[in-house]
Amino acid sequence: MNICVVGSGYVGLVTATCFAEMGHSVIGVDVDAAKVDRLSKGESPLYEPGLSELLHRNIKAGRLSFTTDLPLAVSRSLFVFVAVGTPMGADGSADLKSVLSVARSVALTMSGYRVVVIKSTVPVGTCRLVAEEISGVLDGRKLEVPVPFDVVSNPEFLKEGSAVNDFMRPDRVVVGVSNPEVSEVMRELYAPFLRNGHPVIMMDVLSSELTKYASNSFLAMKISFMNKVAQICDKVGADVMSVRKGMGSDPRIGLPFLYAGVGYGGSCFPKDVQAFVRTGASIGVDMSLLEEVEKINEQQKNWAIQKIVESYPDQTALKVAIWGGAFKPETDDIRDAPSISVISELLARKVLVSLYDPEAMSGLRAVFPSGVEYCENPYDVLKDADILLLLTEWREFRNPDWDQVKSLMKGTLVLDGRNQYEASDLAVHGLSCVGVGRGCFT
Ligand code: UGA
Image 1 (cartoon, rainbow, N blue to C red):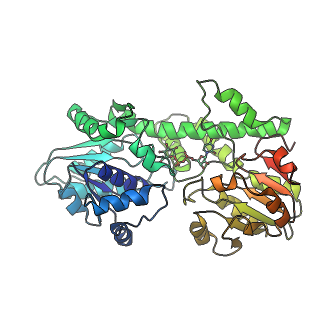
Image 2: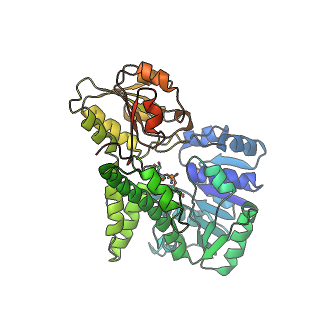
Image 3: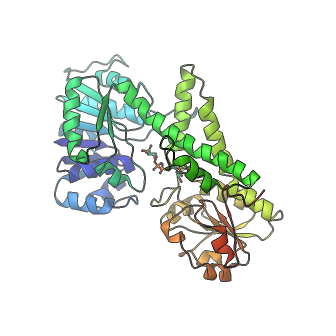
């Protein structure tokens, strides 16, 4: 089938590449000419495991190409996937400017039937707006030649760092349609990805749009809940890791996403929780539950600073060595990463900061061009450091040479923001480890 994917961010790029891998003819579209240039040469602008290889292979095979020319791409495609950004607007709601502008371009270009598939994360009701934009209802414009089209909601559930795998082997595909005939076309499109027996879940458009926000908000709620439990654990001397096991073994609760830490970040949870709150508020539904989720997350981003201040009330000439800056492992993404608020606060307190991250250093350099000492490996950051602070649980930080860590550091405190270490193991090496909610501090 002929597909175009508008927007070549991580969702659009993964979508385009994976459809090409399944043998479809795919055109990726982006307004950024430099990005399109790089992509056309097979260079991925972002770090996503497995993506570069698939990108190269499919470009070489002639199944995948990139362009800035949206009309050309639309004219050659039956499916128009919309995967442009929906950033947080000034009031916290999702900004639909890009989505609606793509809809308008599609309207002005399409010459025959098209299936417009909304993959961008959009508030409930957006597909209807897109349909209205395409048919010109919103501004009284009429399509010169009325062309039939369908607008489908198909939210993505890709996790950064495993997006290719998530797309190729999804646990479910959610599709919202208003025209039953389109269900079959969508089923056919996704069938090769679901040889694992996982379902395409067909529903109405509004429910599909809601599913995305409800899923992300629920996951964010699980994390904030555990971070709150961790705060209690700290006070009473309990261990949140044991509580997690005890709770999560109940299949109704489940073990995943119950890790206390330094707060959730990334381009999705913070913005989607806020947008869902705005949706509720706009229709008179009290969303204080999710407001609290967000508030707890903001508090949690301050965990490291609190521990530092408890241990070193006077931070003069203090040096903190940081392992990890990405919002999670296997990505170079630092959007809304807890590291940003932690580093900003440390610099405001005139603390010396050194940092190593396997993939996110160029992004962090752009945010903090000065004041942070960037090092090329995890041990160089430790020289004369008073504290080692783990912010992202990259695999390479899991089992370090603790004797070397101890010999390089001036102090002995390891702040484990991701509960990767056991205090008893580090004590053997003369280091004292404080995790999140592990009952070490009262
Ligand atoms: C999230 C969802 O998991 C995806 O299903 C969704 O498609 C995506 O948002 C999106 O809307 O595009 P992602 O932002 O890539 O995916 O990251 P997650 O793996 O969900 O992690 C989010 C944050 O939560 C990270 O900062 C992570 O460190 C934190 N986290 C996660 C915890 O603090 N504790 C946990 O137990 C799990």
